[in-house]
Image 1 (tube, rainbow, N blue to C red):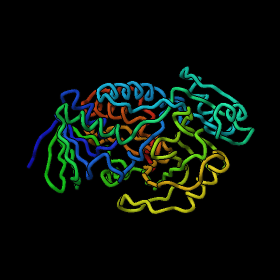
Image 2 (cartoon, rainbow, N blue to C red):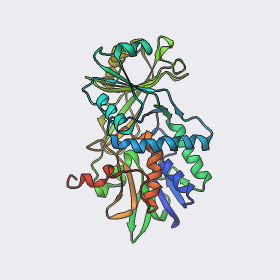
Image 3 (tube, helix red, strand yellow):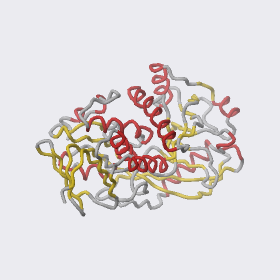
Image 4 (cartoon, rainbow, N blue to C red):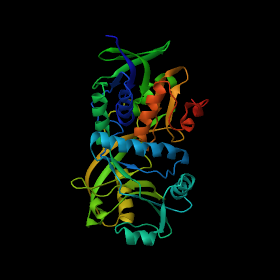
Length: 379
């Protein structure tokens, strides 16, 4: 009872695993705790692949974080001696006066990023198998692609351990307190003490931070895999990742990979999850129908016989921007939450930032726009 550490990390998914690694690499006595055994399929950091891109349509302020994230993913690949980031390129497609295309161009212009613009007819010629409204614009970001999500988490956890971190899995946090510069974390198995705490609890953030009433909403999302009728959608035939803005919402997908097919999903929508996160993802016929309508219209050579389905969760903030901050009444507690369905690509840098904040150092990247202060008066 009462084991002491420098820093405790609650949650060992994308952010938590990266934070545990960053802390342990700095010779910080680190304890990581997860209610399951990561990488697992109960939260948000799974599903085989996640898109990574620099020209961020959501907000140009994310780009400096992405530039550092790219560096850190490269470092992890070197440390792990493992390919984790696949630069397939990314097509972003939609109306020229929509959200995605203008947002990509704004980020690219502000940060000097290389983006190629083409017409839909040119995109059809260069990437056989795609389609779309002839009036839509098509942007190609070559320095984009996908991350192997479970492998990234596993690599961070392995090397966190090798650097001295102690990781407790299948252990549920039931309470935590911060008083007089000391943190006490109580689980269903033991009690631990530390100088600082990182909370990276994913869809369990509201539960872990219930006393703060953060404006977080969890939605259930669905992932689907299909197979092309031709070889044109395959990664080894040069097919890229893609992200579409359509009148029916946002859709994204990946090239077809050996043995698993081509993953596609709807970024829009999702059913709100009330109560405990159960990790269950029953078939949503309406969601799948929208995905298959999208494929029929925009990926016409895709066989619409679904090969497999999986699910994950988005933990949404009202403005769909992350929360990365120290708690106002407990500055030794760092919170990373509300990644709003677009956070995994950032987890390398968010882990580094969390390690810095929990050690009393400044963030290496600007994060003021992700502060808790923006919700003052709304809770």
